[in-house]
Image 1 (cartoon, one colour):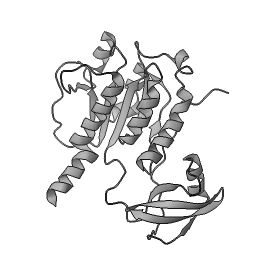
Image 2: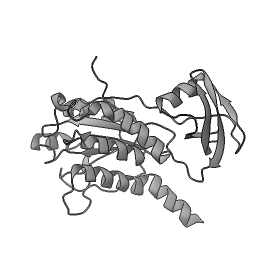
Image 3: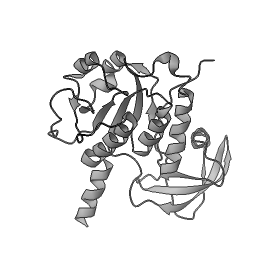
Length: 256
C-alpha cells in the first residue's frame, strides 16, 4: 500500500456549553477526532464553547462511541490563528521537513504544501525523507502548542501544479523569501489569506523565479542568507507579527 504523505485539516473542537470543573459527555464524532489526534485518557486537549471561548479539558474516558472530559482552564487568548497562512515549502533534504511540519504547525499555519522544485528533494526521495511521518508530526506539534485545530497537509506537488492551483490563486498576499525583483510593499489592507513561498537549499531556479514574478513579491528580511528551515521560522513569525496573531496581541496590550 502506498504511504500517505498528506492529511486532511480538522477545525477546532467545540462543545456547546463548558464550565470549569463541570464534566461533560461528548459523542462519537468528537471521540473519533480525539482518537485521530492521539489524545489518551488523563491527557488534555483544547476546545471551545458556543461563544468562542477556549478551554483546556482533561480527558477522563474515551471509547469509539463517545467519552467524558472536564474543563479545568480557560484561555485568555485564543490559540487559533487569526489569518489563513499557507506555507509552500520546497521539500528539504536530511529530513528537515519533519522540523518544518512541527514548527509551521506551532506558528499557526492553515496548510502546508510540500513543493517539488528543481533543487528540492524529488518524489523518488520522499520515502528516504520519512514523508510518511509528516502527518504525525503535525498532530504532536498541535498537542504541544495547545492548538485545537489541525492544519491541512497537501501531498507533495510540482511547482507548476501548485502555481496553477486555487490555493495560489485565492491568496490576498503572496510572499517569497527570495530575490524576485522589488521588495514587498505593505499591502493596502490587512490580508486574510497569506501565501508564503520558501525555496530549497540553493533557492528557486532562475526559471522558477520567472514564473513567480507577477504572482508573488519578494520579501527581504535582512541581508543574511538563511537556511531554508530558518527561513520558515523567520517568514512565518514575521507574517504573524505584521498581519496575524502576534500583531493582534500587541494591539490588545496597547489598549489596556
